[in-house]
Length: 411
Image (cartoon, rainbow, N blue to C red; front, side, top):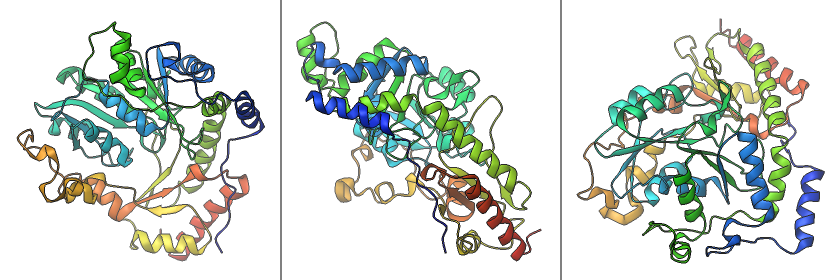
């Protein structure tokens, strides 16, 4: 029988009280899509943004109704034009690639590192072309991408850096929160993240120029530019990506819990690593020097050279011992039907298959061999984000692994 773990839920009475107060006020949103005081939202939106600026130590924090919206804003705010290329890893949410396509730009996939599962700087360099304008790096599972090397590449080739810290909201590089160490970055407030508002996101930047565009894209830019009449921006389309007052009130309370909730996940995952570290053939999460890990997912890689069993067989045995939350592989965006068959525009394919196509973009099998092998053969994710694990639960997981290893005589 599969053991039932307690569901992770950081929402409590403080959030209930905050949301109730907003509901009783009758003002659930204050945004107006023209340049006015209300262009920047209501009191709770602006308070939440001020508190995010202070907490994350960043010049601008701009809320949105989802992190998908945040990615669309981020790409649009760095002067991307049709046909420009943005390099990203295949191990991430589909929204990362679709945010690029939204602006008629081209997603170019670079392989991932075997140890951190983040985008590989060495493969990025191979994928750079004359059309490359930016890198979108994902802090996958909670471990920050290689910010040192990525920033070097961006300086050398004059590229913008977008970082997606949806799964790493309180991960650090040295003394800085990783989400803030780029031209534009941000976090998700989706319901299964470390903290959440149901749906939502926060974009970070230290650039006044980028911040102005982020605010415009969030809130009907094409109409606001005319009424504001104080800038030279033109032809910038905007959306309704505005976060409400209820979500912002909840976010204010959730932000107070972020540090505690991440440290709780770190403690749990460190205990798992200590308990499983003696098992042959298990490659457990690595944390690079000067970085911290938020542990949205506890990633396990199998050394198939040391194991005589397939990943699926081992997973079957672990599930037979009652361990929930384990699943094979992750995702390979470049192998999705959208990119393999180019079905979005029928048989004619995407518009970037025309004369703007650089000839260097490839989505074939073998484009990202590390990602493909890990996905198909050796990677197992434990979705620690879903559970509020007790000490007994942690002991149960470790014991189950050890029993399976003993039963299979894995030495």
